[in-house]
Image (tube, rainbow, N blue to C red; front, side, top):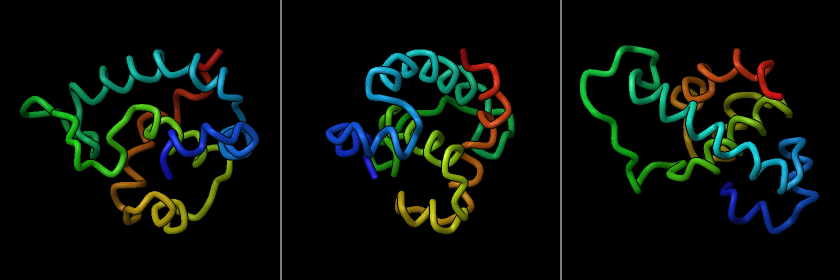
Amino acid sequence: MKYDKVRKTPSQLLSLTGFTPEEFEAFVPTFEYHWNEYYSHFTLKGQPRQRISYNRKSSQLPLVRDKLLFILSYLKNNPLQEYHGATYGMNAAPMQRMGTPFVGHTSQVP
């Protein structure tokens, strides 16, 4: 599932995330800042980073909007990790680690 496809149907985006396209887009810069800040210092496993991380084009979620959609849809719908991972084309292990650092911060969203 990719954001570019979902955003074309506002009702689907609202159903998946609880945000309208305008609200989602307004949240992207804040999310991107925190995402880059965290992952410039830590790996997906939460270990201190030993070298610079680069966003790979072959990544299953290469764009920050796709990452945000992934995390918000997981938090809103609370699916089984296997199901959510399958929806995004990944197994449960990396899927589980991806959202972990941000789950505790969602209560701070204005």
